[in-house]
Amino acid sequence: MKSSTSAKVKMQLLAVFKDVFQRFELNLIGKWIFIGMLIGLAGGLGAWFFMLLLDASKALFTGGLLHRLVPESSVLSGYWKTFFHAKYWWCVPLIPMIGGLISGVLVYLWAPEAEGHGTDGVIHSFHRGRGLIRGRVPLIKTIASAAIIGSGGSAGREGPIAQIGAGFGSLAGRYLKVSVKDRRLMVLAGAAAGISAIFQAPLGGAIFTTEVLYRNHELETEALIPNIISSLTAYSLYTRLVGREQLFSIPPLRFERAEELVLYTFLGLLCALAGVFYIRIFYGLREKLFKPLALPQWLKPALGGLLLGLLAVLLPQIWGGGYEVMQMAMEHKLTATLMVLLVFGKIFATSFTISSGGSGGVFAPSLFIGAMLGGCVGTTFAAWLPAQYVPDPTALVVVGMGGFFAGIAKVPIASIIMVSEMTGGYGLLVPMMLVSAITVLFTRNHSIYEKQALSTIDSPAHKGDFIADLLDGLTVTDTRALKAKPLSVRAVTSLSHMLKKIRGYEQNMLPVVDQEERVLGMIYFRDLRDVLFEGELDLNLVIAADVAKIQFPFVTPAENLHAVITKFAQYDMNELPVLESGSKKLLGVLSKHEVIYTYNQRLESFRAQEHDAVKRGGFL
Image (cartoon, rainbow, N blue to C red; front, side, top):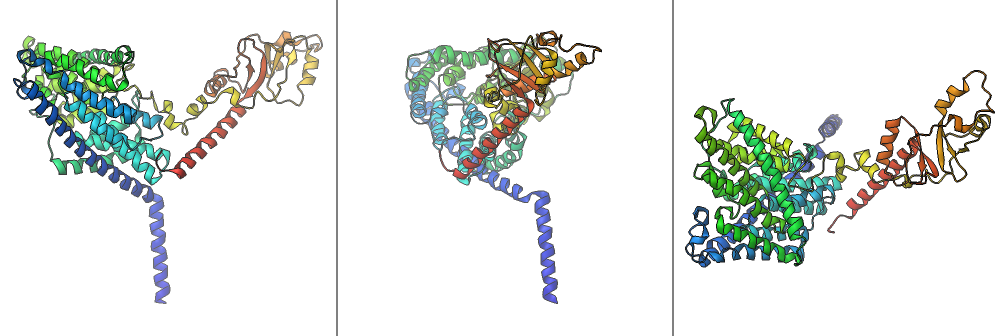
């Protein structure tokens, strides 16, 4: 009796557990908790190792080699005279040139996809690379970026650590043999983990990789939970290893007076203008200077380093990431004139470093440019206007940082949160939202990340989800419309003969053709009813040319099915004639049904390929 009661209790408990699993999808939740924590651990360790290597590189190049070559220079971050005052100033350009050479050799010989600012590499991997990143990329990216940044290159840590973390995510996805969709999410989670750790901005890092994929203000919402889990894990591990430290130190600041919004609006417009200029210079130098040069690819980053070094002779503040200089701007230690020079100097310095093929990110240089713009506006107007109309210049520096990067990268939410986490400037959310919105709106056709898709519907990663994407890759030729001979009539065919001819056919239109099968007009059966009901009409006297429409919609064999579906909707048609381009020779009739059939066939093929790819797994 007791055993039967015990068995019933066990069965009930089992049913309860099954119900819980089904209701809350605990298998799915458990999967992403495990994957998120795994990637977070790898991302945190990757960020820690990258920072160790970066510190060693700075000690070698800036702390060691630079001061041996230019002994008169003290610590570079505090050296605000020009290098012309130093006896050996001409040695300065050699340092970033050496770093560029090391990066160029490593990248172009072993991992060409690691060139430039790595965030674009992550975006490309998500949209068009099926979430695949070669296993060697994180290692090559780590060393190459450390060489560039440590030797004074004007680049940041966001791009390298994003690609490093994404590489770990892709590697884990291949080992675990997850679906392509999940592997893409793991790539984003890896990038988020690295960014969250190295900038100690867990929420901003988690949102950044969901927002940076698209230019038209969309989020990859499915990645948000994996990103949050991996970001929290990476942040916790990284701060445990190196300690918790806010990147910038500012006094408590709050937005309190509405009058200040006028000045913030001006800053937003200035950031937008500078952002467009920055993007055009960045890609203009790549396309018009570095690409046409008859030099080996691996040598071009060295040339970029040399040009940067020559510029640093005049403006040493552009050296490296520039975090110390931004802190000085927050402490009101820079003049407005110098900050204006630094805006233009940093734009060209970053373009020399990264557009030449050097490995590094654009986040820190973008923060630098925004900070100098904000500092310049704050310092200038503080001298011109009464105090009640001008916020603390430090506030304008912080808001400029967030607003400028939001506009050029199309990441307003992530930019606001990351800058707030890095500075502790949460009291400036309102002006930062205003400046970010203005900058994004006025730079909507420009982005520093050229691999961004316009929206989710334009991303190849969503081909299985959006009909339009899949139809874009199919043309009329891929359908069966050209295989069957369509029904047509000559222009002189009588209406009575025509009615006999169309019996038994399912076409809803009748092309009127000449002797060479060129279409002269189109008869639609819905219009033909009006003719048939015109009282005592002699059907032998009315010919096809009398009732045919000369203007009619049609498609050509090369048109993609997305355009065809649009035409069906535009003209309220279920069928369209297929005509040879130019000659208008009749080739077939395409129906909505045939388009849907072709789409379903391609979708099944696509899913089968995905399934086979998951079964294969492993390295490519």
